Length: 335
Ligand SMILES: NC(=O)c1ccc[n+]([C@@H]2O[C@H](COP(=O)([O-])OP(=O)(O)OC[C@H]3O[C@@H](n4cnc5c(N)ncnc54)[C@H](O)[C@@H]3O)[C@@H](O)[C@H]2O)c1
Image 1: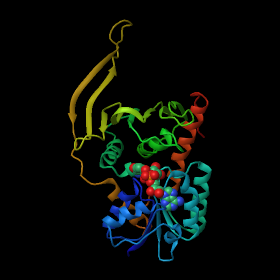
Image 2: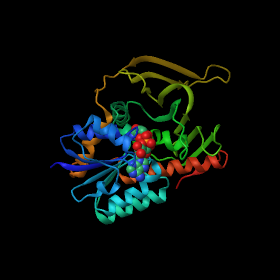
Image 3: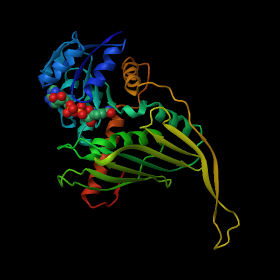
Image 4: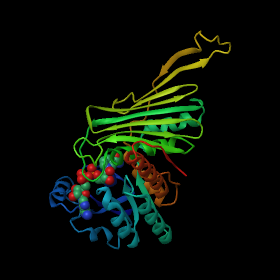
């Protein structure tokens, strides 16, 4: 079965989706849509055979089975509703929508029409993240204690969404996927240096019932690009550096243990510094794996971890971070 797909939005990210859907044996790119004729011209110069249109209605033609939305976040809700109402499955870019109420509406409509929504949480298909997931599941990391993530660069300033809504969907979807438990509270502070209403840096903290803590640093105003996540367990610790071309993961057999016979003023802990292992990871583009997964999910041969329910959970976390920032960093409890 080959599924006809329409891809809407050919700005920065859309061309990556077009490339992977075009290369997939499971899909046929039946329409490429963008309201900007210059973007369509750019796509035609690479793929002369692809039908392009500036009219969103072309994405809703009867033969189309899947609509992919790579348009700005504020369009995901109205265009997603239109696609579902036209009987199409939906692959929507992160963030799924700009409110959890809008996510709920999309999910309810999809359920009512027996259609699927998938959200492009690309990092869940990153081989390093998949490796960490299986490492945690094997118990080799031990009890999870903290995750500390830095995602900073000289970013493209956006007018309609702040740095949290732009960058945090990546990290929030990673922790949502990696950890079995869900956060009990979210606190965040941020600052908008060019526009006080649009934060260009933010520090966000999740607290968990077990005592696990996650901290995130997001910044569009950094002179250097850093993509580092540190995950600390009671047995081992992992450093994930996504800017490294090949050696993205380092597993440290390091830790500290409390001495059983503590004297009040003596050293309280023993340090363990063992081997550092750099696992060999498959060199596969995450988006290619995501496109394969979309096919398996739509054809019923795989359950999905990037469904509309996951998209809605991530948007709830974004909303909680936004509320906490607006309240000066007060923790927002999650139900
Ligand atoms: N998964 C990832 O790693 C990743 C990376 C970057 C961006 N994104 C997401 O992809 C989406 C798009 O981001 P971008 O950086 O490509 O934005 P962009 O502004 O570069 O591109 C958006 C495109 O959508 C077109 N567009 C806007 N409204 C439209 C409409 N009503 N009809 C047709 N075309 C329309 C614009 O002309 C533009 O070409 C966002 O949701 C963003 O968060 C995801």
